[in-house]
Each structure stands twice: as structure tokens, then as C-alpha cells.
Length: 299
Image (cartoon, rainbow, N blue to C red):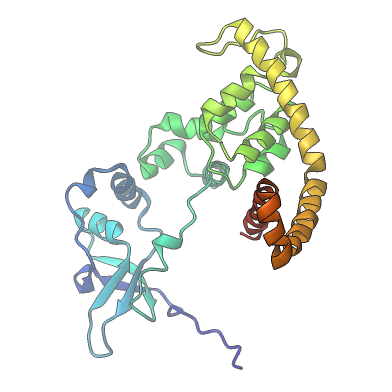
């Protein structure tokens, strides 16, 4: 077996004239009005093109190239009056492995990216122009993690989190921040509305400023107090279920296996169907339930 892995791209980046590139699709005027295109255009105008276009050769004797990835970047270059671009040459003309396999930048990683740019000497104003955003957004992203404990930063580093969620977490003490992040992770819900609901259910002594009463829009003190009690009860129930879940699943699998063999016996199944039909139905329900659980864990 040959373990050699073939490189999918040529190892050098070429600077090609834009006239030699053949797009697979046309960028319509409506697409040029969206925020994404405007940001790409502003970035190219401010700092130049960072990510090369991906192209494939049409043939050894053909000087033209098929554009696989970077249609918006090509349109922006043309609109800005550029005549050439840095290109990465692919060995095939398949485009399905590019943008569709891109992992979007997480909120925390965006913060770190902005901080690295600022530390390297890029001004806030230039960064705002390159990203085509208000400078206030850059200032806010710069202080995104102020007051957030390291454990929560680690938990959220690869999640797409609403920036307002960090404003809510900042109002809690570190231990409560960790609890809240864990609850959000369990629910796979990183929205600011869910974070505010958890803030409303937070005890006064767990707030970063316990001497200041909570203020949640649309909620009275009585409603927040009731949420605190319900959240405490729910959290306790959740911990109890979590501690026994593994044993419960094990018992279910063992019981299901036994019942599966029992029902698999034709004579026993026939007897149960005649004399205890409702019991047979329950046995089948348990077997099906266990099968679904195992399928879910395997997925």
C-alpha cells in the first residue's frame, strides 16, 4: 500500500492577470449590496487581498484558469481597478471542498484576532475600515472578555456566542459564570435571551455586584425571586439525574437485552400475545426505547 499523500495544490502562489481567470458564476449587482461583499471590498482597499484566489489550469497549453473559489474577491478586485491577483493553483477543478468546509470564526477567536492585530500595530480606525464596521464595534470586541473568568473563556472559545451574552456573564461572579456556561452548553443555547433568563434566576449573592439589585427588562422582583427558587430546584434535580444517568442506562440496556431474548422466543411471544397482550406491548416499548438510546449514543 502506498502511504504517499499527494499535495492538492502547487507549492507556489502565482500572480495572474484578472483577464486570464474564468469565473464559474457571475456576481450579480444585488450581491454587491450585501454586507459581506462590502467588507471584502473595504478589506482589499485597505490592506490588499489576504486570502489568494483558488484556480485550476484549463490545460498545459491554455493560459486561462478556472476560478474555483473567490468570486466575491475577484469582483471586488475588478471594481477597485486591480489588474492582477495572487492565486493558489489547485490540481483539479472540483470546488466542493472549499467554502462549504470552512469553519466560521468563533466569537472568542474573533476577539483574539482583533487583539493580535492591535498589538502588531494596526490602529483601531484602520481595522474598522478593513472590516467595514463602526470603530465602536472594534472597541467593544477588544474588551469582550473583560471580567470573564478563564474557565468560561476556555468553554466558549469555539462557540458562536452572541456578544451580548458576555455582557450578561460579566454581571455574575466567576463560579456562577461557570455554572451558567455549563447550563448553556447543556442546552446548546448561547443566545443573550437565555443568558438573561439565567441571570434573572441567579441569586443576589452570586452577582458581581451583590449590593445592586438585578434589573431585567419586563420582569418584576417577585418574578425574578420565583425564577431563583425554580432554578435552584431544577439545578438540584438535574444534578441528581446526571449522577444516576449512567447506571440507569446500564440497567435499561441489560433489561432490554433480556426482554429482547424473551420476546424473541416464538412460544413465549405467542403466550404473551394471547394472555398478556398489554405486557407484551410494554416489553416491546422498552426494547425500542433502549435501541433508540444506543443509536443516539453511537451517532
